[in-house]
Image (cartoon, rainbow, N blue to C red; front, side, top):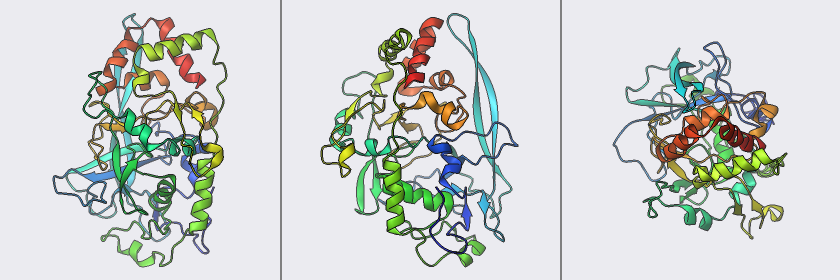
Length: 390
């Protein structure tokens, strides 16, 4: 899928992260973190925000960095300077299981060099984000809002240590705050708005939802050549949204295998299903009839959860705090390497396999992580076999 919407430069830029959706969402799968300083971070982007107590307008997700906006764009059209270069440094930590097995985790630190438009604000927060998988998005959109409200427990009324909450985000078309469900912090309310935001921020293509290029006042060359007309028509945006709504979820391969059934039971016993909710039923009145009234198994509640200091990016997004992330769906996760040619999990891709992803869980998920660490190696392998079958 390319941004084929206009003539001449095809709407691309002036500043952008990539020139096509598939460059980040590899084969409609997930992106990955760079493995070294020389590895191009094309399927990872860096969100920018300012740590400030100043009041936000109702439509604002966060305070933007004054020179670079809310997202660093590391590519540009000829004659325009890219905003900067993303650098990811890793520090390794050794983890030891109860039975003595050792695992090395890597903690990323994000920095930006070759800044072209002045220094970053001293209170800038950098949040690396890899591209998520694109499967089953229409089915997630079709989950009734009433179901998400039913699952939410922001004050932990049942005292189980899990306090998932809804994000409330700005719907551009309705001009009001509504429930968010897309993005790493559930910062977008609908697939159409999510797609339009990606066109605008990632590729530099405007739409009726985002009619302005992401040029800051400091970027005069960018402002001088930005297009005056909308670059992606409502029709094209609608076609892209139809496509993203209808990417199917792969069938499980061996759901009745004894080891996988054992792993499924353990997944529930150690508390993973408290956030990774296995089952939902889509709304009867969802506009695409073939996605309506379906029993689905995404293994997500689409709610925000405090994941602890280790995974915190210290960046808010509407109601989401700097420690909160939306529960990512697990369906299809076992085919990540088959689809994308790599494994890279969590919001910044730091986890190189599913076990590392589990071991980074903290906050509300810390109890489940500790339970996992105490399992025998056989039981840990069963949990991982179950996840690989999803």
